[in-house]
Image 1 (cartoon, rainbow, N blue to C red):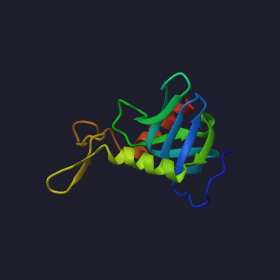
Image 2 (image 1 turned 60 degrees about the vertical axis):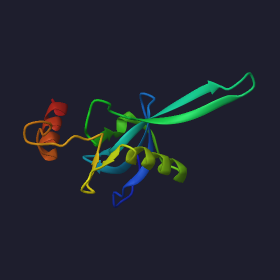
Image 3 (image 1 turned 45 degrees about the horizontal axis):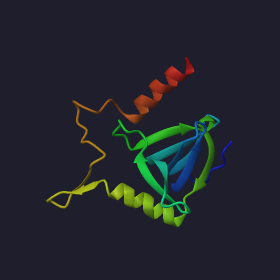
Image 4 (image 1 turned 45 degrees about the vertical axis):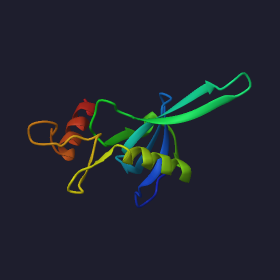
Length: 144
C-alpha cells in the first residue's frame, strides 16, 4: 500500500503508471475502503525528444502534453493498483509544470482569466452530474 500524509495534503508529484506512462500533477493521496487513491489535478504527460546535433553531440529536450487530450476535465482519480511509484517533483520541474499550465490561460478584457484547456460548463453541455453521483455510479459498475 502507498503511504500518504495523514492530513491528505496536496503536493506536486510524479506518478509512474503500470502502463509505463509518467505523469506530473498536483496530487492528494488518500485511502478509501482499504485502497489508496491518487486524486490528480491537471495531470500532464511527459515527452522526451532526442535529436542529433552533429556526429558527436546529442540534444535532449522535454515537453509536456495534456494527459487526456479529448477531455476538459482537470481532475482525475487513479487507483493504487495502476501506480508503480509516486515521487515529489523537483523545484525546477514544478516551475516548468506551472509555466506549462499558465501558458494555456487567456487574459480577458475584464481581467478575468479563462483557460484555453477548459470550456464553460452549463446545464446543456458538459455537465453530467455531481461528483458524488458519478462516484456512486462508478462504484455500482465496478462492484458488478
